[in-house]
Amino acid sequence: MPEPQPPNDLSGERIKAAASETVREGTDVRAKVQELTLLALQRQRFDRHGMREVIRSVTEGVALGAEKSRTDMRLAMSEALTGLDQALRTSAEAGHTALKQLTASGKDFSDSEFKQALANLRKLEDDFLTTVGQVTDAASERVQPGLRDALRAARRTGTETGKQVALSMGDFAQKFSAASMDATLTGLEAANEFGRRFAMVASGILGGLAEALRAPPPEKKEKPKEP
Image (cartoon, rainbow, N blue to C red; front, side):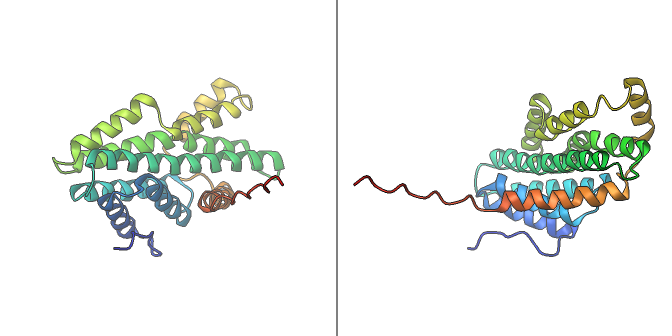
């Protein structure tokens, strides 16, 4: 049987179906979920709403696929969430790079836009864990324990997404005073969008990072044998 491939039409239902088939087959789950998530994120606007929709669709697919998993169900779910986390870390990296480019260019990128983008970027890990938790609560009794274990482990050890977000926050911490930043972030956290210009730049960077991850490693040339 051929391996499940990421769908060209990445609607929520297609994303869910692809994630489900990947977990059901149980082969190379982490890498395939990571690739599927990155493809889905590239098709969405770079904002919190789009990212949450992708997280939800992938996690719902993982829960469905685990019901019919041909391998260790708990391991498959853990690997799937790790792949999802790795894809979101790449998104956070793209957002970080986009902010650096926009602030370095000095082309009419206001402090307010910067703070809005940074405020929403800061919420990415929380959105990830909260959305997975919501899907877990709605999952079947058979699947819930494994998903809860994977989610608990992610909260305990910290996610790669959260580490990348923390790096971004630290990198820009000197740009504004702590009091100013905290007040602005609190006021902006309800916003769903990062801002049009930031979203466009970050989406382009995310596409490049995803392509680099998909590229096969260069072949190692054999050294000529000594005569």
